[in-house]
Every structure is written in C-alpha cells, then in structure tokens.
Amino acid sequence: GNSVTQMEGPVTLSEEAFLTINCTYTATGYPSLFWYVQYPGEGLQLLLKATKADDKGSNKGFEATYRKETTSFHLEKGSVQVSDSAVYFCALRRAGDYKLSFGAGTTVTVRA
Amino acid sequence: NAGVTQTPKFQVLKTGQSMTLQCAQDMNHEYMSWYRQDPGMGLRLIHYSVGAGITDQGEVPNGYNVSRSTTEDFPLRLLSAAPSQTSVYFCASSPDRGLDEQYFGPGTRLTVT
Image 1: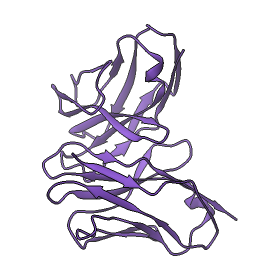
Image 2 (image 1 turned 120 degrees about the horizontal axis):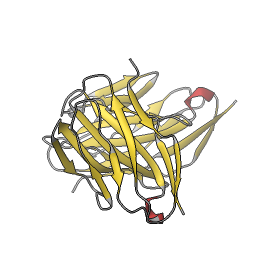
Image 3 (image 1 turned 135 degrees about the vertical axis):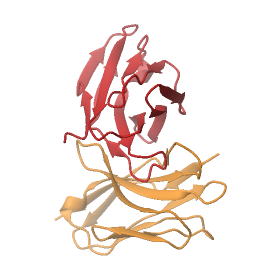
Image 4 (image 1 turned 120 degrees about the vertical axis):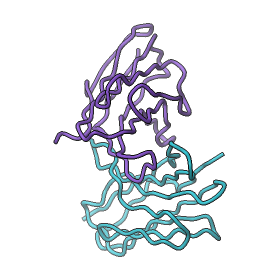
C-alpha cells in the first residue's frame, strides 16, 4: 500500500538557520506529493506540491523536489523565521485514488 | 466566504454517548472528507465523499457514520463513543477529486471519558 515516512521530530532551530525535513514514500506508479503545514491551533494548509518526477514545488521560501529515483520529497528552507514554527506533514496521492496518505508530521520550533 | 467550518470546537463525551460533528463548506466543493489526528500518527482518513449522495470508507471507518445529502454539509456521527475515539477531528474539502489542494477546517477536539 501507500505510505509516507517523515523525519522524526521535534526539530528546534535558531532563526536564520537552514531547515531540512526528510520525507520518503512507498507507492506504485507516479503519485502526487504534497507538503502541508499546521500552525498552532489551526487546520492544515497546503504549503507546496509536485505532481511528476523532477518537479520542484515552492512557496514562502520553502522548496521540495520530487525525486523518483530515491522516492523522496524532502522539504527545505534556507533561512527560517520564528513564524515558521509549526507541524509539517508530507503526503501523497496515488494516481486514480481519492485519498491522501499522510506522514506522522514533524514539529518544528524556531527560536529568536 | 467562510471556507470550511466545524462545530463544536471542543466536546467531552461519556463512553456510550452518541453525537454528530458538523462540517460545512461554502465553496461548492465536490469532495469532502473527515480525518482524525492522533499524536505520532499523522492524519488518518475516516470517510470521504466525492459528491452529494456518495460516501465511502477511509482507513479507520469503524465506529463512525457519514452522509452527504447536500454539497455543503458532511456530518460525522459517532454512534457509541469509546475512549479510543479521543482525538482531534478535521474536516476537509477539495474542488475536485484530484485533491490538488484540500482546504481544512479548524478542527474539533473530542475527549471521551
């Protein structure tokens, strides 16, 4: 079946540090890949997505590249801010499915 | 445009009680779904609907019922609450079945004692 494995947290960083959150997946075919973010007390919001191999999704300074050869979709940001403190979820949707499969989430705390 | 709304925000139930979690969206979205969020487990899909009158089970449907009589509303019913159903519940909607983007409600925190 489909599954998503995320780097375990929590992750604590200082402002302006580099952030990487690893995400690998197991799925047949060519799934679509997503990163969602959940700020404290809120529902999830789509951060970025990629629908085919070698696509790069980007938003708010975050980037992730769909790597078919390593079945990965790692999230990166070059210089984090306190406002980036949140829980980040990697997710996939297999082509033809009506469902998303989510990873366990990674809690990121950025200190001033 | 309110987006996806959920009520209540918080609820405490005793084991065996029943209740309905409400979800509504005003974006005319075809697809709606319910997830539960538990620590260390991410979000797990309970039920989903690809349109009015059509529902299907997700990963963890046991103990929950849904119906979709209108495009706007997608209530989740707990038939006989159990402590294992203590969780945060999120409703989400999407304009299409491709789920290119899902819009999430603010969540309902449910405690079953």
